[in-house]
Image (cartoon, rainbow, N blue to C red; front, side, top):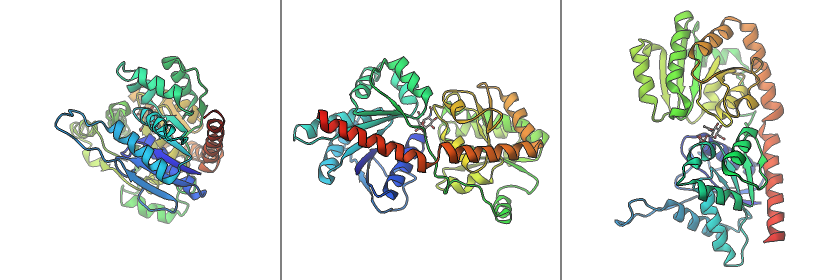
Length: 384
Ligand code: GMT
């Protein structure tokens, strides 16, 4: 198949899923064309079968807001026509599904079919999409998509509840490449890599996000402050975003700055995650919680919040520990209890890896997308 993929190329779970999906599809022999305003950040290598098409957005003094969605629609139609795309797959509804709808109409006027699939990821439904300025058009574009997928049952329920969507929605959960995200088996190699980040007696707690308010990065620092009072530990924060400064200030105010490392955006999180003992994910909301899945695949359990789709991913007490939002005491006690009971921690590490392999491995989930594309293309061919 020849597939076009559009996503937000910056640091964020929906862009990561879209990029990893494109890489996996290309590895299966499909031709994948990324269409976006900049190259997705995990798309570093020029793999066979992967192409990138930048969307130029020109400005004009009359425009207070350059119309990216229109430039995107034009580019989608162009790329689809020149490369004979079979399907477009857009990640995050706003504005991508609206642009895809326009591109489909532009090509239909020329007698060409371009079905598109919209994947809903989270705040496009639970937050931004609920804003009255976007809700009617988002609902329309979802309803008119040739296919719609959601990354969890939770998000599917919210889409129906908030948007009154009546069309079919396929739940295709997020995935991880278990060969790329895996534990480091060689203990000497792992110890050497950990030594560069922490003292040998220190536990490593990690957080990985885009530091948006919904991630509650300040809670991460508060949880760590309680943990480090009781046991030697380091906190590694991977990523960047609006709440980084607040978290940095708090680490200073609490006098723990020497134990807290802000590592910024990292390309190879698969090399960092297996070095951690615990991942902290105290989010206000997660429709899935991709970082926790990537950690699970590396045998790192999460101490997280019981929100959105997280309980579909983390089995509380088996593959991680879940707490109410804002329960900093609970989460720090939970992390400490795991660090003090290595047997329990190891059981959780093994259970997490097993779950990642059995349910969320890219070898299982990516073929689900392929089957869904085939259905959508077939249906569009019949009804188009
Ligand atoms: O919805 C968002 O906040 C954006 C999106 C992103 O680009 O980071 O995150 C969502 O998609 C991820 C990938 O599918 C999920 O793992 C996240 O749970 C989800 N975020 C929220 O629901 C807040």
